[in-house]
Image (cartoon, rainbow, N blue to C red; front, side, top):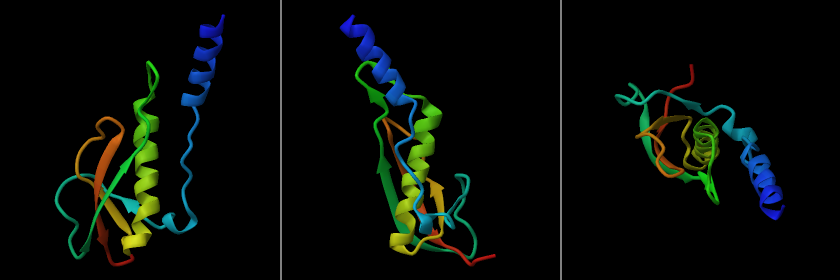
Length: 105
């Protein structure tokens, strides 16, 4: 019975999004991977990570990706960046982004 209750709690928790977007991160955009954006100054890189599994349960990959992007957007204003570009796919709950300062359109 304990195992069933524990499993139910773990499944409920893994469906939740624990990362919220900071107010100053709302203006940060994420562009697709590829060539560096023209007319932008590179500010550095942002590396973020979240729990991708809980005990034996793998979290939904889309939720993990969304949380990684939100965390990266939250970090961007701290290095004066307003544009992020993934440097690769998420792996084991971690991802790196290039951070740029681009002219505001």
